[in-house]
Length: 92
Image 1 (cartoon, rainbow, N blue to C red):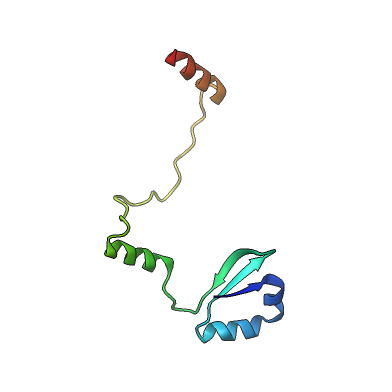
Image 2 (image 1 turned 180 degrees about the horizontal axis):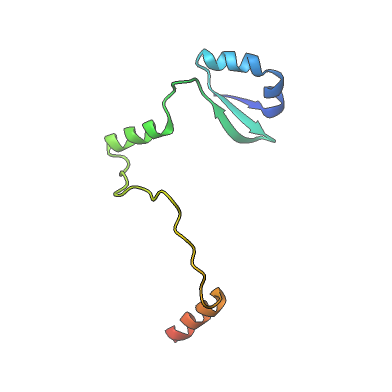
């Protein structure tokens, strides 16, 4: 996989996209830290790779579906530190 900085990507975007269209994968970095991968359209997605690992028995599939939303937060009658101190005192 070819690595390219974001500044170089800006100046060579058309050329980079042509090479990706020919099948090359490109990793985009910002200050040396990878931030994105540009892959050819139709390349196997990560979900496909995970499915393959499940089929090989190297990964267990989740036993239930992820919730559609995060759980609702409820206001506590007391502050968190008060609850922690009360729990600590109860253990003594």
